Amino acid sequence: MSTIVNPPTNAAPNYRVGDERLIRVTPNAARKVSALLARQARPTGVLRVAVVGGGCSGLQYKMDLQDGPANRDILVETGGVRVVVDPKSALYVTGSELDYVEALQDGGFKVKNPNAATSCSCGESFSA
Image (cartoon, rainbow, N blue to C red; front, side):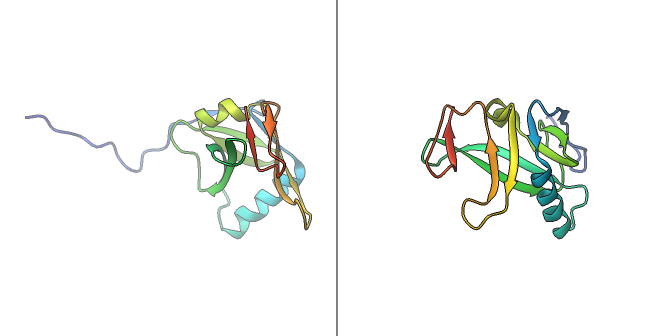
């Protein structure tokens, strides 16, 4: 009879450290991310940037604040904030810049992605 041993649930995640060649955050975006993390009382939190299927052009960005990196993530410290990207999303966001625009129309986080072959007119999705 074999015994299944579950790994400890409090084990630290296994992640890699990347640099700004993966993704870079502008000063405006860094200020906004820092303010959002402070509001959520996550002083060591991270911004997760992911690429998921959907939107007009087939792919779209998903961003979320989290407590820290997960297994297999790539962690990038840029602009004074920590950004994590999963390996699959890294294929699509490499070389991207994350900016934040404060405006009534078309405001919010904007990704400038050199890998995007096309993007939709609303700017919320892309294809690679």
